[in-house]
Length: 191
Image (cartoon, rainbow, N blue to C red; front, side, top):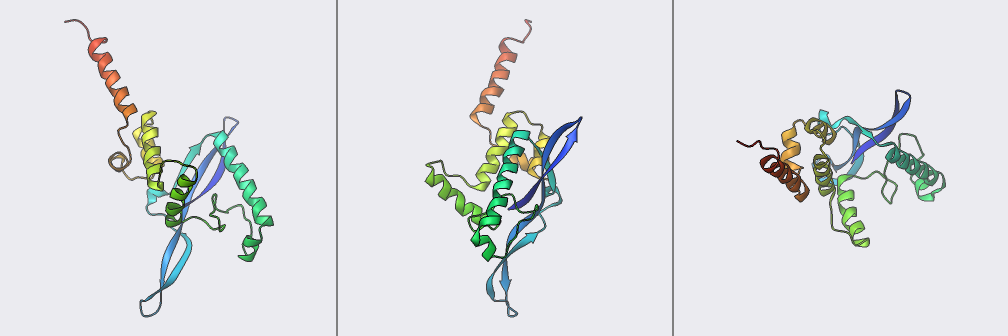
């Protein structure tokens, strides 16, 4: 799971926010001197590609929700016996989202937690990748420029974004067909 921090900046006197994606919390297999698997270790690590390091501007209302969430986490850190038993202390660099064990998510734990959440609330089953695909498709439907979407998705080329992440939804088909219909039947000049 990527680590993200929230940073504020000012544009023409207006406060703006962006998410900074700058490292990953990963699960590593630990081996003994004979090459036998003896366990796992979780720790911060580099992101997969240089494109993965990025800043993403976010809406101020969303930023306010994230800041409120961070304040709630800070309170939990001060009062939770489970966190104290793990010898963890609050820092402003704490991960944005933590699991029930107050540790950062790794891909596997998030992938197994989402179906349980969906089942609990009677939602359609999703995975982190399905959410990522849906996000890309939604941004594309709303007219986000290809280069911008590619950068937000942290891909080296738009081909990757387009080929693997954007689905041609019914909404996109309807919009495109409506444009063709207008061109053919209304905007065409009589010959």
